[in-house]
Each structure stands twice: as C-alpha cells, then as structure tokens.
Length: 190
Image (cartoon, rainbow, N blue to C red; front, side):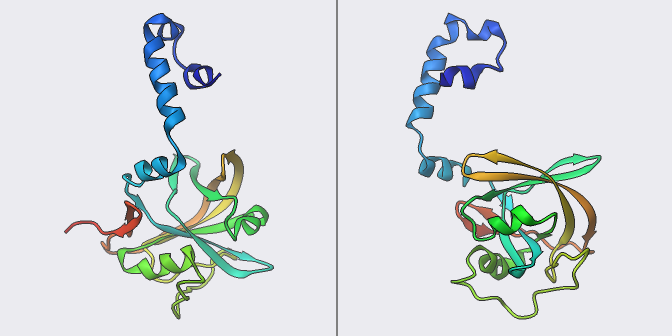
C-alpha cells in the first residue's frame, strides 16, 4: 500500500520491475525513519521567524512563533503556515478569520522566544504597535501582513492555513531577518 501512495504520481513506465529494488529501498528507508530523525533533517533547513498574531475574544492579544511560513502566490497574494493541533492557540486560530504575520528582525529573538513559550519567557514591555484591521501588530518588525483565512487542510499533527494578504507593510532599511536552523536561532553572516 505505501508504494502506491508514494509512487502513484510517477509515469507507468517507472513503476515496472526495473524500479522494484528502488521502491523497496524507499519503503524500507521511510519505515525506519521516525519523528526525531525527521525533525533533525528538517532542522538543517534554515527558515525565517515570524510571530502570527490575532485578537481573540477570550484571550485578547495573542500570538505564536511560526517558522513554517511560505509564499504561495503573487496573484492573489497567498501565504501558508502550519500550526500544531496541540498548540495553546489552536482553538483561537480555528475561530479567527483575520490574523497578522509579523516578520522578525535579528534583534527580536526575545520576542520570538516569548511567543514560542510564554511561561518560560515573559513578555517584554512595549512590544505592541497600533492594530491593523483589528489584528495586533508587533513593534519594530521587518514588516507585517494582515491575512484573511481562505482554507485549512489537515496535515498529520498540524493544520495548514492558507491565507490571503489583505494589507501589508515593509519597514524601510536593510535590517536582517531572524533565522532558525539546527533548533537554534541564527543570523545572516556579515
């Protein structure tokens, strides 16, 4: 069964006996992988760091650190990110129609840590800017976009959010983004 799911997109000619050894090796390799190995491999991929914020009737201003952001389309301007179903804010994101994506600069590691684990890292003072379209915006970021949720998709233990940017702002200047790689924060080499 897994070989059908893994190889159903290959042309028919590639699914014949000459590739049987390859298919068996892939199946064996996939079966031997585990979530720890997968996390270690994906940790090799450097990402930017964002905080996705929303205004929730029950929680007030809230946010969560996300590094799974990607652009999907320019016309219309679409993004996606993934949220763990066990995240404290998952119910709030299920209710939300609008949220803001705040792109962090390399000086904002403390803000990222706070929104990743608010119990361990207290909120620094004066981090909020004026809200846009009802969404909380973080002060001093590289930029932000207010997004309208378009669709959600199940993705294992996460939910994939597809959203359209309805307002955005990029701050002037050439500050560097905050990076995350090998399970730690990084900076662009100068």
